[in-house]
Figure 1 (cartoon, rainbow, N blue to C red):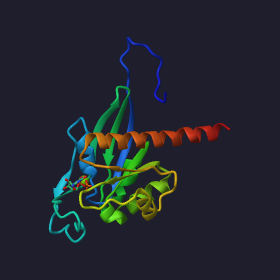
Figure 2: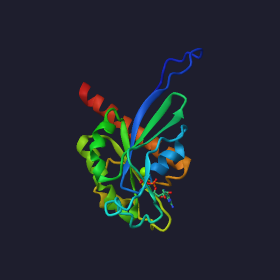
Figure 3: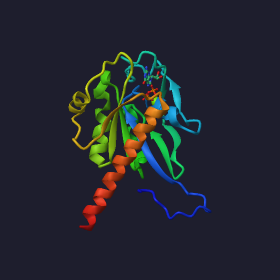
Figure 4: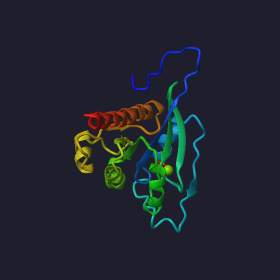
Amino acid sequence: MVFGRSSDNRRPVEPVALKILVAGGFGVGKTTLVGAVSEIRPLRTEEALSEVGRPVDDTAGVEQKTTTTVAMDFGRITLREDLVLYLFGTPGQDRFWFLWDELAQGALGAVVLADTRRLADSFAAVDYFERRGISFTVAVNCFEGAGLFPAETVRTALDLDPGVPLMMCDARERESVKDVLVAVVEHALERVSGERRHATT
Ligand SMILES: Nc1nc2c(ncn2[C@@H]2O[C@H](COP(=O)(O)OP(=O)(O)O)[C@@H](O)[C@H]2O)c(=O)[nH]1
Ligand SMILES: [Mg+2]
């Protein structure tokens, strides 16, 4: 058991807290995902899309979107009594890149959300985590009408390494998002323990 502790029933279990990043292009569903699972009212810094921001914030394909996250989404989910995740949504727009390195500090892993209608919008996030060696899992947010692409097609389009998990999800559904988060944690921990094994042999 990865998080096993000596069984002492009299003591309340102190949960392990892990930091997970939620990344992906503008309008891909990051705020929705954090909101769907968070036990605390998600801390959001949304701003109405202004006329000034409009040429920059390309909403083609996400016409209903009228707000944008300026700083970040933050949420918490207890996956098990001994395991709590803190979720940090990364800002989707390129002009907030400077925040990413701050957010990435101490993160165990990340989920990169992707929308098959605008896959290219998630390239930057994939690239960022690859370059920094941060473990990530790709979750395709299955918007209606987006057309269902086989996982292999998405994998090729995003040029993912074979070891990167890819799954389908609905960012609005708590159970679906929980499945994604479990996969993110498992993948990240596999990598950590793999590195440990390498270090000791
Ligand atoms: N139909 C559908 N709409 C979604 C889904 N996920 C998010 N949305 C909507 O898509 C828009 C953008 O989502 P949002 O979470 O704000 O994207 P963010 O920019 O990545 O934070 C919002 O209007 C959401 O309600 C989904 O799985 N299906
Ligand atoms: Mg958002």
